[in-house]
Length: 260
Image (cartoon, rainbow, N blue to C red; front, side, top):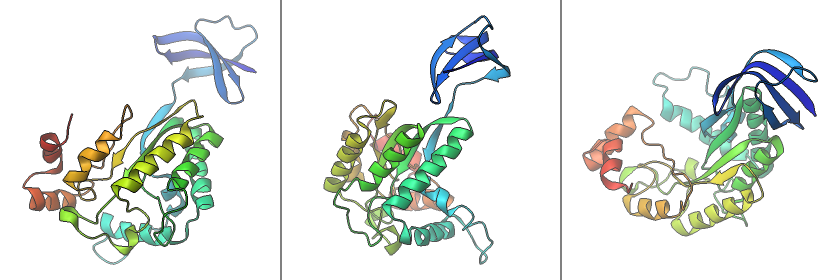
């Protein structure tokens, strides 16, 4: 047990002075506001609660630097996405777990103690479903358990390549699911975090370009008490495509058509 005392700390009740903290195996076991300094190791300065990372794709930590070199004129989010698709060509489940654990470790070192993982990498490199449809979601959960990261696991439903039911591209083969398979993914994710104290599962329709209106309501029904998370609009082109498809911008369409 390590015992630290901070000059100031932000607690649920507000700022307190001389806050003693007992830590065992990297976990805070007790907090003592206005503690006597005897037996504590003083740390000058202030202590803040850990921060949540509200949107992450941990596998992308492994491609850092691959898209930072200038390419042909006209580079954009969409050309970056092609680099990402190529990177996915060889990732195994072991790779996904190792990269996730590394990314989470870095987040913890930077003061982020909880993570919302927008997880859309589901299938094998050729697009085939693993024997366990939640294989890669389970690997992300294992990384969180290993590192001690608080996890909100958000399995992503990704059904089409663009608005109006456009066919998915070859690069999206590891993402695409149907409603039946997605239900199994969510069930598997819940099993994967069931033994973890600081973990919850939500649902995540990827975006209006990747999820049709009919499917959206069925996905939301799977959320139960968990959170719902979506890419509303990542780029100007996505807003323009949504206007062409529906006559509305993405936020306006969701407010008019999505429950709650």
